[in-house]
Image (cartoon, rainbow, N blue to C red; front, side, top):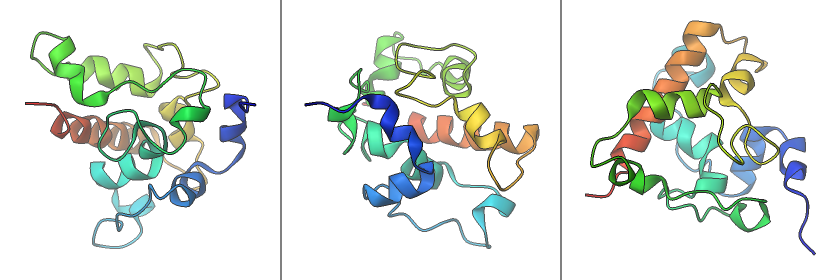
Length: 143
């Protein structure tokens, strides 16, 4: 029997990702990532890879338990005529352009999740973290 997807969000997101093997990348040099800013690779592996997979192909360890299969993030540019739609991806991640499973019980709205983090991110820090993830996803695009 499949578990409801909303169960995944009952756990702290960073701890959940680490438990699934997604948090295997060290935080950026220079101290606590919550204070100094987070690299896109670190943030992606901490918050996204548990569902989207470390390679972005939608085959993370939690993918099977979700209501909607996570999309292959490596094909975003291909689906948009060969051009990576940076602002569109940013709006999806921050919750302004919700997709099925993105911002619902399967996918947190990261703008809200980062803003409400115990580390006290302000709007500029939230935007910086989201942009770092969006730019990292750009590096995953299929050639």
